Length: 241
Image (tube, rainbow, N blue to C red; front, side):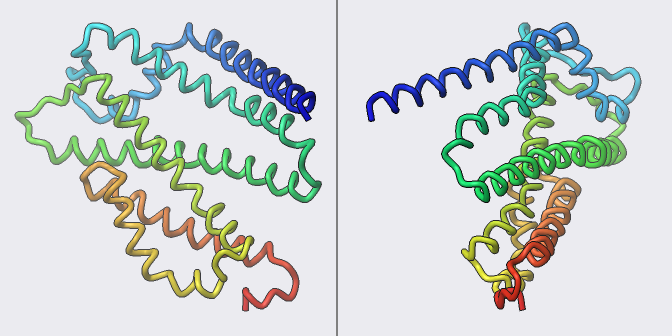
C-alpha cells in the first residue's frame, strides 16, 4: 500500500513536471511577442476610438507587467492540450473504457466551447460594445482607457463567455446521469430564459448590450444541451418522451 502511494506520487510529480515544461516552453516562445499580443487584444477598442486617442498606463510598471500577464495567459491556453494530456495519462489507467471515452469527449468539448466563447466575445461582443459606447458618448469626452483596466475588463469577459458556453455540457450531463429528467428540464424553459438575463446582469458590465449578448447565447446553449441529450440517449429511455 505504501509503495503504491509512493509510485502514484512519483507519477504525479512526473506529469506536473511535463505540464510545467510545456507551459514554460510556450511562454518563452511567446515572450518576444508580448507587445504584439496586447496589440491584438486592444484591437477591438482601438478600432472604435478617435485616431488621436490611445490606451494609457497610469501605473509605472503596467507597460511591462500587463503584456507579461497576457503572455502567461496565452501560454497557459496554448499549452492546455499538453496539460490535459498529462492529466489524462495520470488518471486513465485507473478508469474503465466507457469512463475514459466519456471523460475524453467531455474534455475536448469543454476546450472547444471555451474557445468558441472567447472568440464570440472578441469578434462580436467587444466590437459592438465599443462601437455603441463610442457613438453615444459626449463629444466632450475623449476615450483614453488605462491598459490595466482594459486588460481586466476584457479578460473577465473572456472567462465569463468561455464558462457560460459550457452550458450544453452541463445540461447534457445533468440529464445523462439522471440528476434531472428531460421532461423537467423542458418545463423549466421559461424560468431558465429569465434566469439567463439575471445571470448576464450579474456577470457582465452594467450595459444592456453586454447582457443581451450573454443572455441570448446562454439560453440557446441551454436548448442545445437538451438537443444533444435527446440525440445521445439510451434506447427506449422513457425520460425523453
